[in-house]
Length: 262
Image (cartoon, rainbow, N blue to C red; front, side):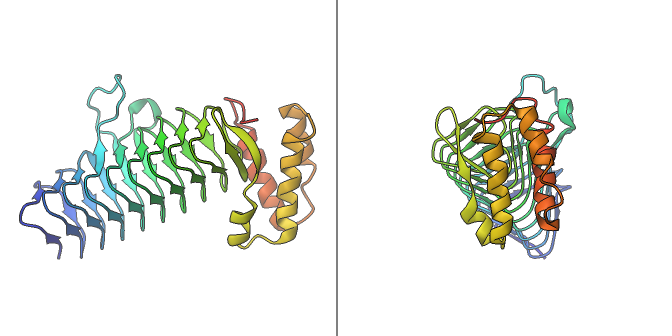
């Protein structure tokens, strides 16, 4: 049912779904589960308690499921869980979680992870994310759906990036980046909203206008974060679609313990 190259090593106990392809010199550990139609490239190592869903493409020389780069790690059976339809390019490194944060590193569906990206322990990534080459995520980073991170960006541990947010080339994030907001620089500064991305996802002009209004409230009126949250909350009721965006923003800002990118 699976196509395994003669030079690959698949340890006893590994579970491979139908039409899985294992390339030359790849190594699959005993606690690994790989879903239907997923391909594992040459020289890739998949180890640890790693579960990979259906239809993923993992290219050559990736390291998937290695133990976390955390000196507190003491060999606990923590996990890496990867969803369906993801593309993970060459030399990417994805580590398992730690018991200090639930024990799971998680990647959603339909994500595009370019070469040399590092996804550290306990990261939580949503779906439809693009991470460009050589971007590095510290431990416990959370990325919402539809996030785009520009090449060579760095995200500090425990930072959250809201849905539909975007960073430019070589951006350094050490504070939370709210939903819809674009940022660039070292350190990062807010630039505007990801209007083009929202158009591509079917947002109406009216809905985008309300997102812009939330951005102006946070970044153009000189308000404190608490005052900005209150004013954004008062926008509820204008439209059902807009209310979902307001709720997304309020939920994110209400948990911004690191502060937000300004």
